[in-house]
Length: 495
Image (cartoon, rainbow, N blue to C red; front, side):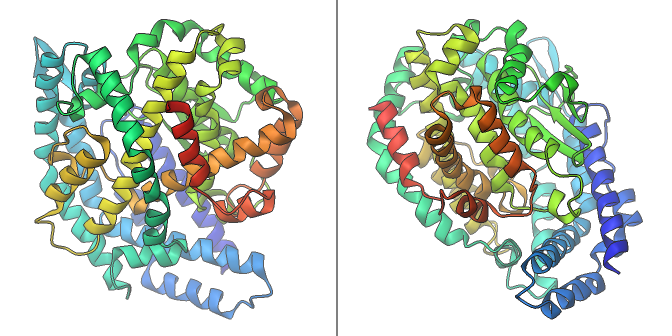
């Protein structure tokens, strides 16, 4: 039974990921998931879930690998049961976003182009006006998003779980309350310095006080456009190539990784890595917008891509696709944070006078981490019941307080991730720093120029998604995941 299940599971993953790639890369106008779910529907029926649970229960605790494999398959079946229940609404939301156009200043923009335009706009009055259009487009389909959320909640309860949160805590073996509590210390311990440095940056570069800042200013500020000339588009691919070469990875002969950097109107604004067939077909999508943002996106997604590209082909499918995403996010954070490495900036870009940029980059990283930690708490409350009457207010209040950018209620559903994915970002932010410190202690501060470090990374990448982030940290000898070093790093860099 399991051999056939694994075969179909791998085929399903490839079909779904290929569909997401074509839609997300702007090559398709619609996201057509229903045919795929109908074709492979037997993989995530209640009966399939029951049988997989029985397989897990019947497997002795002495057979750890077998139990882990069964747990991964059971997790897949349960999560896809939920997705199957909401697939029509998923398609409808994606189609509505793809069909949305926004008229502004004599231009017709797609929804995706509007987000890019808000971030790029220097004039605040124009930026705010354009952002109001963006928010109106989001609000127009919030009823669909609410309906989809309630459908997911209903599907979770139908499987016997108390609620959506309980389901994911059990199948992912995580305690979101504990994660929020541990990470939440970062908010209090970085607050004074964060507010001071944010106020300085806003006044100096946007002519605003911290009490005036809004979400549209946040979208613009994180781009750090004033440093764009130090990150030329012509050097982007060479910097990625040379960074990987330092680790002994020749991307020019790496046929299993395709970097899709083509500019298409409907291409998603958020860079992503889509592993269609691990390790043989990995897609890395970026939407070039210029400057350091492109470097950060390519390095981040490159961390994902290398993880999947070096995964051992002989691994079972469940150890390739359904893992603890905090692990792969740790590799992604590890690489994009090279932008805060003065030696790397000097050697790769001749950017020796990088002190101001590094401080600005670290401030943006702290902005984003504070936002992520806060979103975890908000999403826990969002999924606690079907009553959404206070959800938009909770979202706006929590995000405004944590980031100090006034945040509209409108994005209370569009600014959430599936299956508490935000918890993966929270944990990865901490673990990636611990991994960097380990690499520096073993291979030197220029670990990114060490083929021995590359061999070490390839060795852990080979295990794919077999281990959780905490298990990998323990195996390396750097665990458990600890937020104190991350807090100290932010405070030291910004003091």
